[in-house]
Length: 358
Image (tube, rainbow, N blue to C red; front, side, top):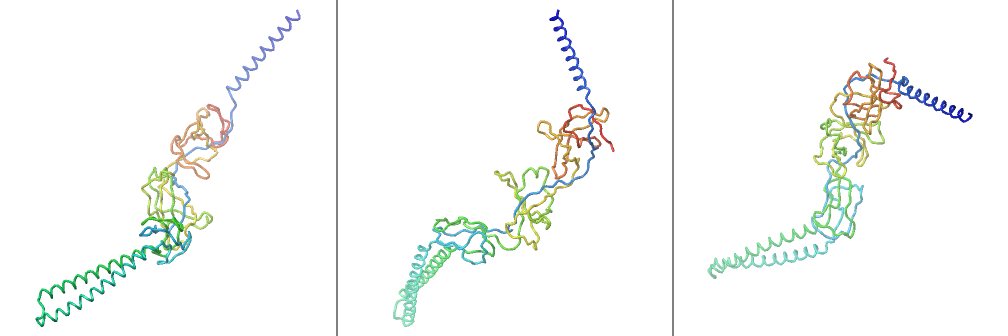
């Protein structure tokens, strides 16, 4: 009898547990009204922009190279060295060129001596011809010999000029005032003719150079005016004008090089790190605070309130721009819809919410 009472007691407990579970499930399905903060969205005009870091560079940069090949015996500059036009920057071993010049000088002296001798002979034969002492054919031969010797002198002079030019080309000189920004040679290195060995940034007008991601150009080129300031001097700002957008995309970085002309009075030295803000033409979008941002399987989304039944649903949106205090939505929302801007962390699909419409 006692066993029967125990079994009955256990069945009663189990039944009560089932009833309690059903009651909890029913409470969960109905849910409680969750208070949130919401805003009624509206479309407004905004101007897309992007901030990119860059560097101050000379508008004109020259890649310097030797016109002849050889072994580097001297380098007088380093990166950052200020130079003047005509300064010697580096030298090659000129042993061969000096020997060629000496041979050319000796050849010229010999040709000049021969020409002088042939000229005297011609003048003497000219006098003898006037006195009818020699035949005219002999006179013509001396004239031909003199002209040949004269041509030999001209040829020897050209060879000497070439030899002197080759000797001069073993010295690399600055073609303008400026600063050395890159070095590609060391003493003892063998270089070939026209191989770039130094980069010279010319004094004068400077550019702000940026590498902008390709995605920024999907909607067209930016406006010509760019706001620029040094990274460590955000209070000092100037405006530049885009003068060149590279037609080539850097395959390694996926960026496009943009050069911006700066005002002549810009004081920033070469190499100064800067920040540039590029602007595009104004367009329409919906601005939402960061607190409204959620995620739907990795895609940006927001909670939208159905004003007829006060239930929320998560909706994917297209974000055109992320800004410091908000983000711009261009697809997924319609003007006058209500979006949860605070309190959406623990919401679930179809949950009933309350909010202050004021």
